[in-house]
Image (cartoon, rainbow, N blue to C red; front, side, top):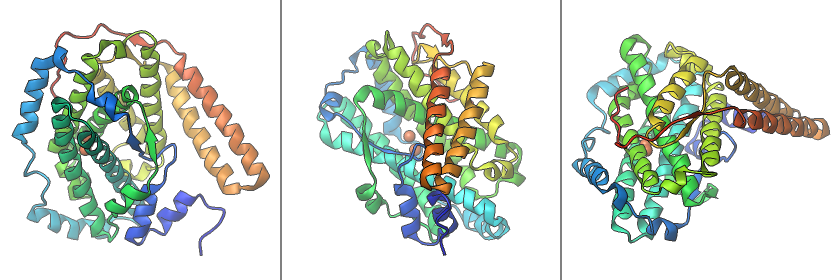
Length: 367
Ligand SMILES: [Fe+2]
Ligand SMILES: [Fe+2]
């Protein structure tokens, strides 16, 4: 029987046994789950990348050469590792790992849908070509993770997910800030895990982690594409837009911090600790973002650190209030919303680190 006082997400996770359950979990839209986006295609069609033409053409040649075309295939060792490693997973770790796979697959697929919709709706050859390449990559990524979900009989019905999940409209500049950050943070997350497991192969509890190195180079390049698009429109990186940049960096970091702390066992199994892992990811992401963002969040500021911890505690209190339900639960939930908004506001008002943007935009994935 399903306990009506439990958080619906916990219920869904605890009873995850079919592909319908996995699809329902992926379809949920909350503050912490990956979203699907749509945008203004006409404005996308008008983008002009000529101010960054030379770097753009080099990047397009990299997409064209498609060095990862043979990467997303399983080798013989994959099946062997699955056979020996999966029976060793504790039920709790299995649950966190499945949650990780489902949210990763959803976010890869979210990119695939957005890039593909833009490709279909524009005639601008630069943008159309770029979106085709990125949709190609994301579809491989989503498919590869979904194969691992299918090993647990929990493959997501991606066709159905595309139809049932809610779409959030973002105008192009918000798509650029948010997607750039999510690609670069995706790179930083995958490479941090890969390097850790390279140092400690005994902690690699699933073969999929061996794929992360070449995989994250795709994400890095997707981020490069948005960096060039933004640098081609310098007004997006000036004046009041710097406040939007600050907002998006904070929102992305805070969401990741709260979400990752719901999966402590996953990080522990890899010999990582959620807070240390997150700060390593923030550090890499902040280093990379200097190619395009003139402002940077000071992640070493004690107010920032205390603020993230407070957002995490508020999110946990909100879960408890939701589970409690009724009038008291609703009041507590409203209290949590006010506290979270206040904390976020305080973080937003902290001083930022400012930079001149480098004349050479492109970077190499050297982490
Ligand atoms: Fe991806
Ligand atoms: Fe990507």
